[in-house]
Image (cartoon, rainbow over all chains, first blue to last red; front, side, top):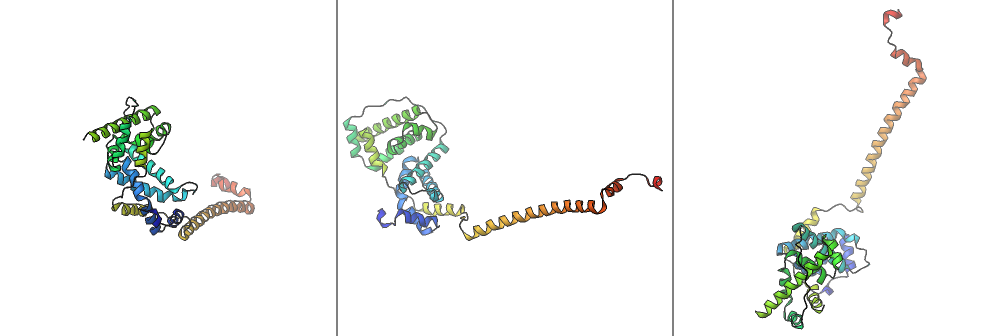
Length: 182
Length: 97
């Protein structure tokens, strides 16, 4: 969906702050596909993704007055959705299994194999990762948080975050190799 | 690092259309938690009512207290402190007459 058909973010925000239902719908229409993309990456099933999207938007509308307008609005929204996804993850998983860390060398063939995959295929591979791996992988590889930040967010050690990521990456590479073979 | 970058590039801007029912669920959730904004005229009226009620209650308490001590003072001034002694005098009646 093109965002050009929508008014400026600040006009939409102003409307939402005045409780305009049409502006709220406009904000939803403008960003729901992007935010659902985030929800789908973190969720382990479609129901969970729906819950993350709904809870995230409710939080956005309830906290719009806290947006200072200093940064990019989409970035502010993304952080709310990532935090909502983490809250959902916490509700369902109280423990983390600690795995041996082994950073593997990736060759050019594996890098090129990624190009041959459709986004949906990569997404399905990420979604098939165990919950802990998937969350750390999303936070580190996609969102760009450091292991220290992830450790604080998920209440785990930095070492656990690193090992979870390494294991997630190894599993993904294995899945890509298998996909190539088939 | 190149592998990471490629995965990031492919997935970061991912857009997926959400199911249709999501918006109505969000709307009903917002309706549930709807509170009267502080700037609305109703909220101002409610706020004034609260302050007025608090002022009335405080006024009543103070009036009762002041009235009580005023009456005590008045009683002492008019009848004198002996009145009290007279009231609490427990001398049997046959001893007086």
